[in-house]
Length: 217
Image (cartoon, rainbow, N blue to C red; front, side, top):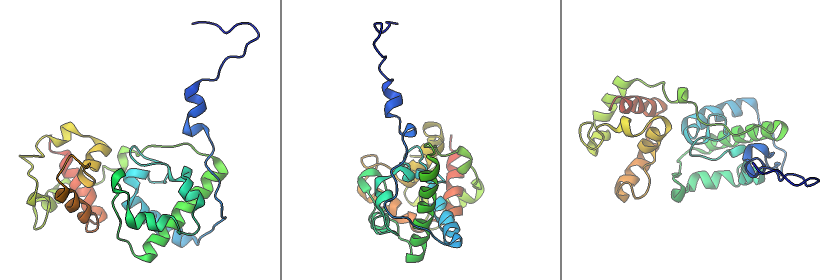
């Protein structure tokens, strides 16, 4: 490896200088605090609805950004920027619109800001979704849901289009394929059906169907 000439400082490594984890998150413009009960309620809702993409602690997943380092979150004042985004979604980035009550959404905002406050104080790095977050469902119950009235089998077949799906996709990629199939990978009406089902799934439904899909190898 070539050495820098004597007296000349070595240039910093580019990947270290630009690593998101090496930079402190943007500071919140408005100091905010919330009741612990609201934060805990928001954590439960966030983990169920958003944790797959953004991580259980909002610090980022394989497909979703770290919300504690988000400029929008840093500039948000008690949901004035977060709430409209969650309700409208960002379809071009694979994020659907979520139908949540005002109380549910306010609780999620409280949780996000609580995590943001911790990041402001500690400057934690980005983390990915742990596989253990996904592997908690009941495959037998997922099979019943898949084949039940109004279930997935209305459009999909375990021995047809989904045969071997768990061999092609694993972990979070499989879950994302199930919840948010990419535009171009499915017809527009199929995408709409998947997004519509997001408002009907219970937490157990999502984990159970995922556990069943894992068996299709």
